[in-house]
Length: 106
Image (cartoon, rainbow, N blue to C red; front, top):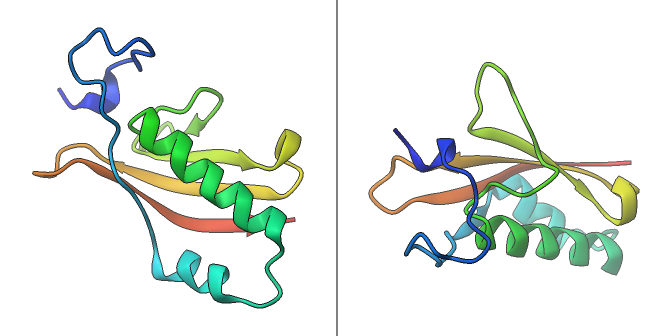
């Protein structure tokens, strides 16, 4: 069973209180370099990476695909006002991690 199936333990009582790295896809990295990207967008994506890291991808309020539960979506900005970030939980890798694969801005 992968860690994706395990609920997030906020207290770290399970002995694994470290988060997993959260990487950005080349597409999301390009968004960071776009001069049109506002500080709010930048902050929302950085905030998402921190939450994904801290929870090992199981961010409260994130939604998962029924067919592929490792793929998740998280709202960006207050109440999702900026858009949605899609990410993948790679729990079965030798070094578990998450990758933000796409950001859809509104």
